[in-house]
Image: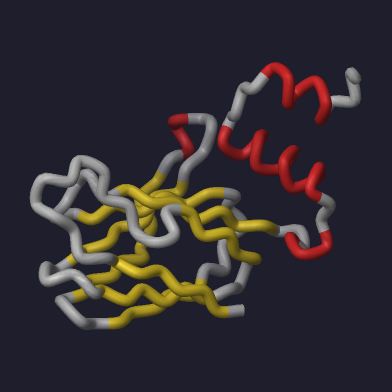
Length: 134
């Protein structure tokens, strides 16, 4: 399956600079296309994120997009999460959530459990429901 990320035109004074969408949910083997609609170049570097800091690594994938350019990468990794940052604009950090299970066939509860574990979300009331304590 193909997914699309837009790099929007940012204002110079914006402190939060997320791409659209800021997190892409994909299945292993899917392709993501980035479209740079900004007037500036963006050099994307991809980082494997892991709860164990010793397992975090910069991947070989890189994408350099000048204004108006389009680039794509297929992600065939067994990693649960890959973040990517623009080397030029360090405030531009976005994320890719890679599902090894078929996301479309998961129930909403399964999706929430999966995302809660992946992003280490600690919401007490939600956790009680997901863990079957209510």
